[in-house]
Length: 416
Image (cartoon, rainbow, N blue to C red; front, side):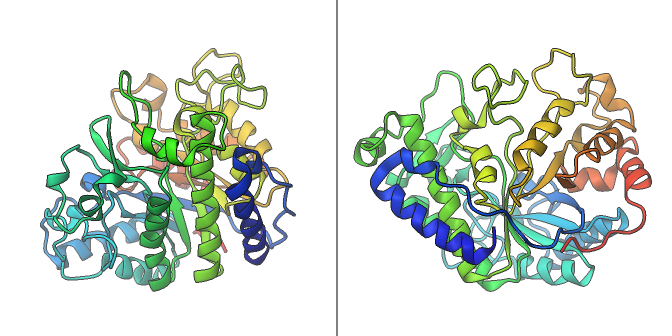
């Protein structure tokens, strides 16, 4: 959907949300995207949470951090990629000078301490200089990978607004059911969109948190205050996430037209035994039911520019009775995306290639290449994104090199 069309559509739909509750969550389908088809995307995620990919450790000098970041960008070029999805808001903190949130702890080891340079600004400039798109990857609701608010810097919004915070599963989250939280997290993310020429705003798979056995996400007070129009709490929660998606899409279009909005969810929307529209899977997690994220609807209604389901399973024969199968999920997502104008990219589990803890098939350097061969049969698949940068560089068993040799000749061109 074009940005102007989406803005009008979103405004009308959000007005409906305010009065009619969950029933308004299924509007009339918009017209499909009529833009010229883009070139195939070849991307990698560059994760910063807990120093997963970058920086290699907290406390490096600014020059050392910068050199490591540029090395990742150079590696993307060497592997013939054309996009980097850079995690810039890992735990309700920022990799740019933000007026809303503190500097990220992964940089200096101390949350709120300035690193002496601007990582996001540098990443945008240097990625574009190399012919790479830079997608800024945000996590909307995760505050911390612990449950002790006193470990957050004193100026952290979560300490100033403890009523916004829900501890769950050993982590702290902002409560998606509070309108003031929804506004705040959008403001924090949109600050980066205003300041930098981002090619996309990117979210991963964290909405309401993944279920933890024996624990309850305590949003009783918020549901009592704001959930009166809904038949049950799950419908209210899905509406909260729907509103976040629509409002963010609308605001991106107003702030920086042309910047894309993409989401990378867990790869199973619903199992077919739960919903006839679902996939032939038996996954233990379903995004619609467990994370309260109606990812299929966002594609069918054209609310976002692209979707990247994380299809981190093996490609197996269709008659294999496994919880989830790449061979099943690629055509399912292709059918979801068909005719919508929403680009379908596939999230690829490069991190599993050569991991001795994984099944034998992941020890075969050709497994990942076979995934791309299978996906190429479906014209709706417009590219792939690999998790993650550390493995793109290390390439334990040569799986990434095999992908490049088999599929990424000649060198990449910018997708748009």
